[in-house]
Length: 306
Image 1 (tube, rainbow, N blue to C red):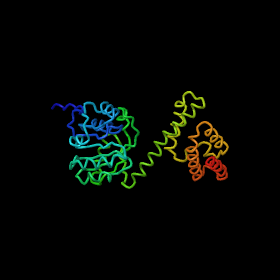
Image 2 (image 1 turned 90 degrees about the vertical axis):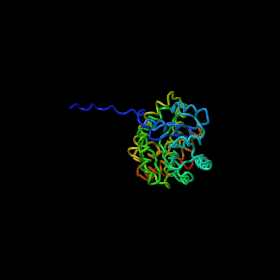
Image 3 (image 1 turned 45 degrees about the vertical axis):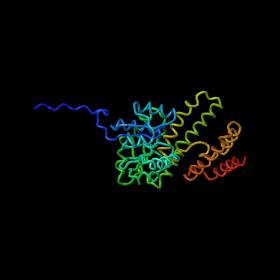
Image 4 (image 1 turned 30 degrees about the horizontal axis):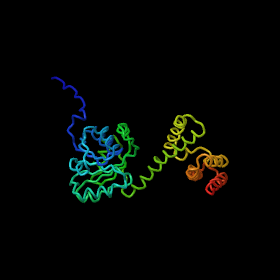
């Protein structure tokens, strides 16, 4: 009896497409998610975008997928990604419902971190199946984003009966689903913004100050330092705190504030706020001695008054 030869894994392009996919809003996120779904065997069929940058992104990540108006995207797709700015999402949903574009049984997915599925209620009443899938990742609008989705956490909110479907879509995109209750979405999003968005501001300010101090390659100087600090913080939390604030070096902090006022006054308020928060956390965890904290907090208070 002849043994059956092992079969080659099926190329995603040869699989029968399970869902047709549309994108409303060809910003940095939508085309990347649609491209990831395409790798999992789904079929992007339509995308909408207005700006030249949107057209370029769609062409790069979803070649040969037609660019059409939003209502036409919904007419062609079984799964629709609504990837527009947070403040535009509610109006978009209302407009699509009012024009009759939403079809019963259609999966309607938004990628806003701020909202759960309640923002999709008008579409849900029209028969759509609502999902909130927010990738906790910063996007560039280039093909590298598809690779970065591997292992990326997604904040998932959906009706209980759609939870498994929502989590399956995330897994197909290479992500890790993390369930977020509807009421917790704003706090969840604030936490991500506090870490990621403010980190960019802090790093950019730090690089500018290093250039002013004469450092030729501030990115090369900061890379190992910030990489180690991030790794230590993720591993150890507040126990990873170091530096003059955590040590209670009030004189050093006073010198910092004076130099920032001279060379970069726009950074002083942020420095004082972060220093005060760092001092509070170091004090609460027993790393900063109360007698040193008194002088330090005095320096920070003086900084506010100037």
